[in-house]
Image 1 (cartoon, rainbow, N blue to C red):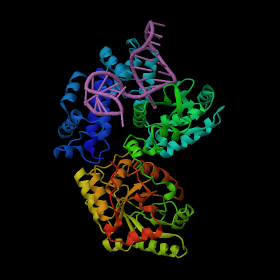
Image 2: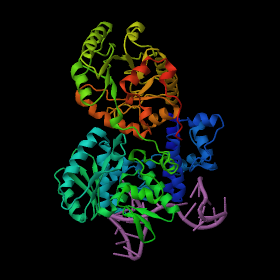
Image 3: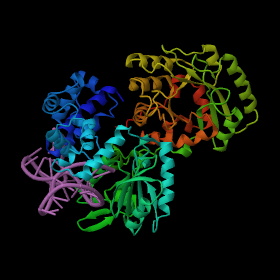
Image 4: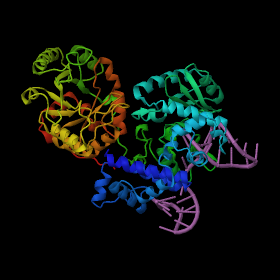
Length: 586
DNA sequence: GCCGTTTTCGGCCCGACTGTTTTCAGTCG
């Protein structure tokens, strides 16, 4: 995603925050938020569009006014309205909105009554007992704000999908044992397979809601109860995420699952669609007047508004409702579609297990091939392979392949891309391999132009087939490098090089937006485990989750090909390795 | 601020929980 688009979206969100504090028409506020969400995922750089004189006017939710403001922000970094709003209220006041329990009204009250302008100031005031004196606040509220802030300033936690799934599975076990619990499903962003989750939303069907809520509150893993009522509860798990529980009767399961899976934006769009048909959707069902006409299953809810079920990974209000209406929802790639993995490590490099063990693990999974891609020997990589090491490994692979008739190990390498885009192995060494994976492991700090140039050059190398984890991001640790992803994707397509979606739950790189861009531009994606041990293949489900969020179909993912198809692709001249025709989804 | 198979004006998704209030606003998901 081009960085300027993110900056424009941030400015629009800031306008919305400040208008909200000001007490502006809530629908006007929403218009700015919707515009921010519309700008974020655009493949095209809004700044470049503006400089070409192109406008976003006419896109959903963007009229003449917003299109003009977006262009102004994209080219100048700000706009007159934002400058005026900043003049009217403190710079850091929008920070207060991030404090749980503080919305626009209370943030404004604290600012005007006590001149509090930052979370740190609010925390100090709460500890001094000054907040309870403000009209609209009381001692319990003050305590809640203090606790929330103390936790937040200590470091806000999001959880990668592997960690989240451990907590999720534990909670499903706990809640399944609750009295009267029938179905227990993890919904929310976890079900949508977002790259990280901040909390777990769990739906339970049961006739007796309070009994299930009580059961959760008594669970040993619960560290703190944030809220609870007869049908819902919010708790924080010891060392883990917040859990939001919702209990509904069996007949409402489908409607509740839609509601609780979200996203919020998807739900709003869906309810608006229902409204246009004279229907009302809530978590209990679909209603025409007083009469309930659907809600037991998700399918019944979508059917009521004339749509097929939309896969959870697509429910982000990024065009899925329109696609569903026009019967062009993609048939999304599934875990079972994978036929191999193109990025596997062994103990000859930095892996933990032998070549034979990794091949056996892949075969057990039903794979037809793996490509071994241990790192090349760069200065920082003590376990890397040089030309001699690769030759020894190639011989071992040949011997192993001789024992298979239904499986093949490809001779590969994870070759380092140097600062200037050259590779750190010679062309003749690379030419002797079946498949070269190229990757960056350092100098993530290059500016956007140089980083892009570096990757474009590597992509253009005739031996390179896969660009591994293209942005180098590590969730919660390292931001993605500055990159013109659109250029990278187009270059990959033109060279017949495949872009990797590394399924490591801390990487998930490419992300969903980049996957969507690959599909739209006609570049192929390789979903790889980057396995360093046999069990690491389990993480492919997270990679497939991202791929599905990026609207990828089986044909968009190269390692869904059979061994014979893959071998043909590897042997083909560059343009043939690309997908035939780009598929525009937007 | 956007938008139109009810509308160019008057709508804009919906409900649970909390706390402060004295009948409901604010916040959240």
